[in-house]
Image 1 (cartoon, rainbow, N blue to C red):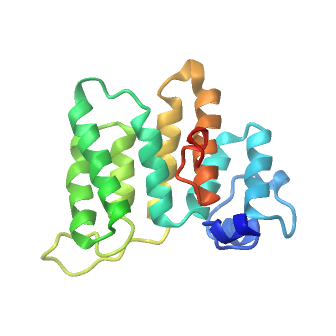
Image 2: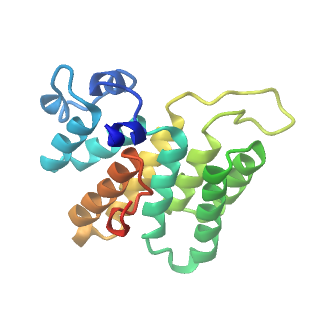
Length: 194
């Protein structure tokens, strides 16, 4: 009962979450009527259907928790010459997670582009796409579609997993462990005791 009180996923069934996006055909055989979200996630992970598991969890988590997950995975991805820009993008996204203000949301957007083709860019972009207007500050308001943060987060996590192709399965499993820990009310570092 205490674990359920900490659960960050608010929907009672996986179907509720899957109804908000185009579930891949490869994931449908694992979805049962009335299935709890974490049970569906576990079924996808056990079947090594990692990309579908990431897509699902990115939509199941609230936006702040999802961006935090993307930040954790991005931090484990080598940045090469762009290390400073990637670190700045992650820090900007994490600032928004800690305090989701308009100022932090805009700073995440500004820090995202210099990060280039790194998951950090998508972690910061996920923060920016979380709400408010995605138009320039002086332009008429343009609300982001509800699914944009989840798309950015899923992209960040999948890019981070693929960053080391020889360890992609291991990285997917580790990153899904982080996301599952966050979904259960932890900090995304299950080895550290949640």
